Length: 497
Image 1 (cartoon, one colour):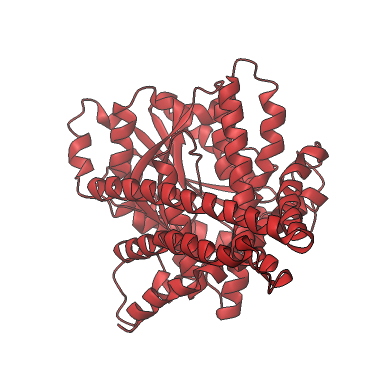
Image 2: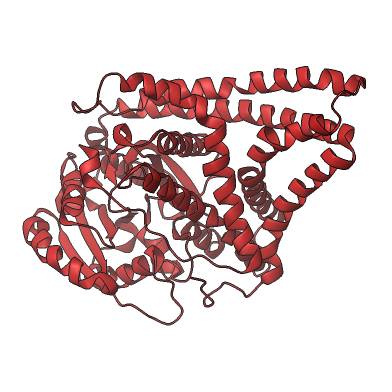
């Protein structure tokens, strides 16, 4: 159902630009293929060459990030943080917004917080339910609090009111309400704002046992720790062994994309489950309640608030989450499509940045251009590149079949060579995926290792069906003013074991 309030619809032309850009290039390439096929072939060769170079650039950064990831895993960060004088002053607020979850999912979230060595008497847990799910939420909230409250510095339960003017029902509006409620607790306890780190986690998030120790170590050792968010390596591995092949490919693809971003701080935004300073959250007024992509928008809120003096620091430790699951294969694919479309709805940041950048004259023009270009180029590549490479690239040869033109005769070999070189990226990411798999559950057959290997042959299909299509879908809806609400990915605890 379309939503017509909040920030959507205020800048219709700007909302149309990403979609018009993607569709414009696709229509241009198709038109060349039909009416000027030789020019179309040249265009495809140039684009494929650009794509190959982009793949190599991406792989280099993924390998660099993976090396940092492996090194970070080997360190006992709890022992390291205890070497810093006054480390106990740091408090962690863990926000867990929920909707339609069962108690087993909540219980596993609590157990994951207790699994690490870090002092839980320095953690404040906030369990945030929704009024529209109050009956279900109330069934377990009280029992979960009774079971775990004495293990943390505090345990706060909130219920976000439904139907508040100017809000979209979803994670962002819930987090904003949770922030306001936990602020009362923090003020009552007189905890200094500059000593608090907030982790906004999806309810299925399982942080590495050393995550909070590493987070504290970074917070206590880096310059200006209240001017940075902290991004872990997001892996969708809680149920990866029981997930469908397209879901696994998409899950690993997201992880490798994030790894590549972690070593490029000039491009890095926050994504999914991440951490940030409480001081910043208070300064910006908490999360914006009237959009879908709250996880990345909160970074841009801070970036604007401090006129560009804000960044994202990579953590290089994993937080694992659930890959999309469904009652059957088809439901998993539908769920994957909707999840990818929701992530692609980050296109909503483009008009926000354009309009907000005008209001910040102290923000450098170079930073403004860099963020706008990276965002628009990334959205275009997501939506259009797979279609240009795997579909539109063949049309010129169909329309000019039989021609003896030198370009026509030789270009298939050129394109084949480019694609073979670009396939190197598939081998690298495929190999790395095996090193990032959790232990195989006993109920899963050892033969699944072969499935894990063979699934990468379906990368082009997955790239199109669950990459380009949902991204183009999101950009087209945004272009046409058919705005999305917040879609919650279903959690299936049984699929984890």
